[in-house]
Amino acid sequence: MELSLSASPSTLAARHAELDSQIAEETARPHPDNAIVAELKKAKLRIKDALIRTPG
Image (cartoon, rainbow, N blue to C red; front, top):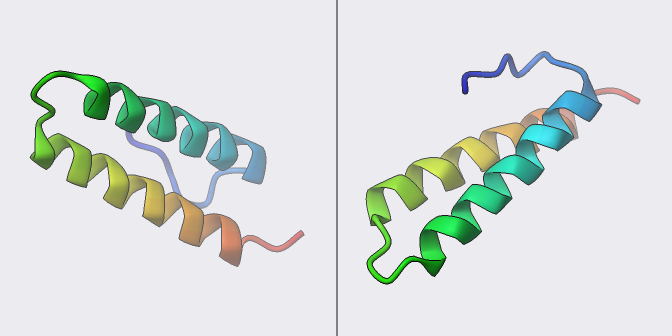
């Protein structure tokens, strides 16, 4: 799911939580795909940065 980093803070927070869940799901697998985990973590960090820069 592609998300604009200029979305509302509540939308960004929801996507951040969704990514956290996906990361937990992938790492719980017997043989997690490290490339997928890395991409999910990068996306989560981009959203966190956007949340920090969002006024209000």
